[in-house]
Each structure stands twice: as structure tokens, then as C-alpha cells.
Length: 53
Image (cartoon, rainbow, N blue to C red; front, side, top):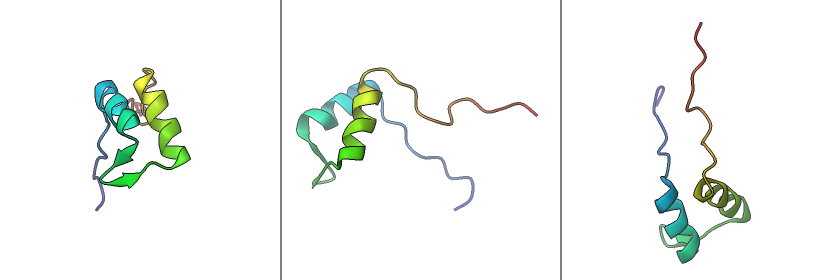
């Protein structure tokens, strides 16, 4: 699956996931909680900017 882009949750979606504490019916792991917490707080996701060659 070369070139496949991952979904980047919006701030609103990240807040909703944190409130529910679940994603696709499973509890969030501590790492996922940190990621969604940062995303809900406005942190950018990796890979938004690409380096120009």
C-alpha cells in the first residue's frame, strides 16, 4: 500500500473520541489518549509539511 495517506482527525473529532474514551468499540491506549489530547489541543499531526527538494 505504498503512497497511502493516513487519516488526520480534526480537533472536534479528537475531542469527541477523548470524551467517549473509545475508538471503534475499543478502549483507548495511553498513547492514543496522549495523541488525541495533543490533537484536541491544536497540535499538528506529523507529515503535514513536505520538504522541498
